[in-house]
Length: 309
Ligand SMILES: NC(=O)C1=CN([C@@H]2O[C@H](COP(=O)(O)OP(=O)(O)OC[C@H]3O[C@@H](n4cnc5c(N)ncnc54)[C@H](OP(=O)(O)O)[C@@H]3O)[C@@H](O)[C@H]2O)C=CC1
Ligand SMILES: CC(C)(CO)C(=O)C(=O)O
Image (cartoon, rainbow, N blue to C red; front, side, top):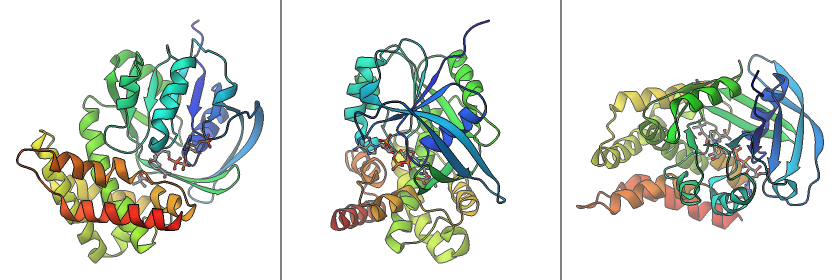
């Protein structure tokens, strides 16, 4: 019998900790690795995750700082740290985990690039269709929207499927897709609407299915960002994006978008990888496409987060 590789969840936040708790509750060997704090020795923490319909899950999760881990030759890395920390994290991971496959689970366009540049041998990309929110220390609220797609950046379908089989649990499911770049753009366009509009009006994710006027602002972002994607050969029907946006809005009603959680907590946001990256790509085209509303709302988020910090 082949040994089942250990899972390292890199970045123990609102998504990483529920994921680690679900794996631990399913008897998968998992370690939640802290990236923003150095020098924390291994501990076992009791983690509670609130689920829909008043259910909840409790699991013991092993935690340790990245700085405290020696070189590791076997296992799987699931990257759930903020994309804003990627440069620092890629440098640290490369010295300790250079042989391991990594699954980049962050929102945004091009978030996997630093791991390609760092020479990781196997890189997979996951697009998360779930929401996680920290209620208090080691206590989270989690909602799955639908299965989260995983595809290949650099690797092979067999390994991708083996990883999916290992990390899927009934509460957090993953599926294999051929065209992960299209999936990443689809989610980034949807995020460009959620992660700018919700924080700017200071409201939860449910706003789009509750208020058709706010949904119309999202539609403008969808139109603009889709025309940038179309220019690089990634085409969407507007309906496909709108339906997915409304589905997320319904299924995460009451949850706060990660960018609003960031602003509320005085943290840097990932808007550079969303609205502002889409605008940069559009404006770098020949002839340039300026996704004006998408860009301006992104710039407002940047200003709002800086003024709060
Ligand atoms: N929250 C959500 O609902 C969703 C989030 N996502 C995406 O998942 C990813 C994780 O999001 P989420 O869990 O909400 O994020 P959190 O804000 O909870 O942060 C995740 C972890 O990133 C690490 N981190 C943050 N800043 C730094 C830094 N400067 N240096 C080193 N490490 C840092 C910390 O790890 P540690 O605590 O270990 O030190 C932190 O706990 C993001 O890319 C997000 O866009 C996608 C879908 C939904
Ligand atoms: C759009 C949403 C809620 C979907 O998972 C998300 O990506 C986030 O909270 O950042």
